[in-house]
Image 1: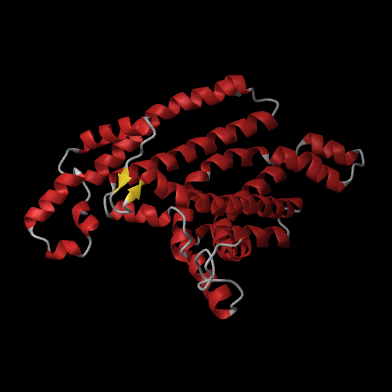
Image 2 (image 1 turned 90 degrees about the vertical axis):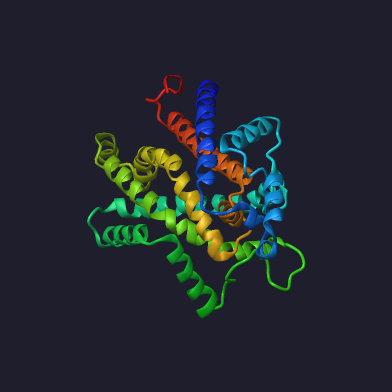
Length: 322
């Protein structure tokens, strides 16, 4: 296990280098002017000399290769730079928002896996039945629905029509402090929407995996020996059918991150979505690079986790050979 993690860590180094270099290159070719984004409305009345001086102070005129190298060498020492748009260190920008994004993704992913597994098992028990067709149709319908559309529909239904859940934010408007109860109530809608966007994949994968396992000879033999249906389903078929789902965990991380950005924007959730949008539109090089590295690390960690889980649960797979 340690050897596999070490090899993946070495592989991640060139990936991060290429990704961050690409971010600086794309940002340099962006039509947005970072000086005007930094100055805001004050740039409208500023003379050219002031703008040029500000441009020099921000280092905008330097080539993106120089800026990338300066940022990279500073990041290796733990200094992620200063965000000109947020007007605070990049580490503080990420630290203040990452915990809320991590909470949203963790809750949504856990709900999606549990509910998707339950629905997939129900559908696989009797292939072709009305229940199987209903679950499969619902999964395909949700798979085709954009996550922002689901989010807007949820706001309209639960916040505007029924008024049972808050429409957005982290706490109530009049609240002066953050309490666990308020966070929990405000988390329901964004986490539920994000979970629904991931739900179809786990449902369909579990349905296919458990359905194939139920048709295998060992499961048929267990049924012939008179073993209870519950033991056959959850003790034999489910364990075998979940193996393909383990590989799905790593592949869904990029989609989870993208969906989280959209969900955070719709529900005004104080995660990294707002920082990402502002960094992109203002060509905030240090913040863009740090957020990209964070997303890349999450994808690589998800793939590593999927491989480790597969090796632990499938005795045919040896981690030393991966």
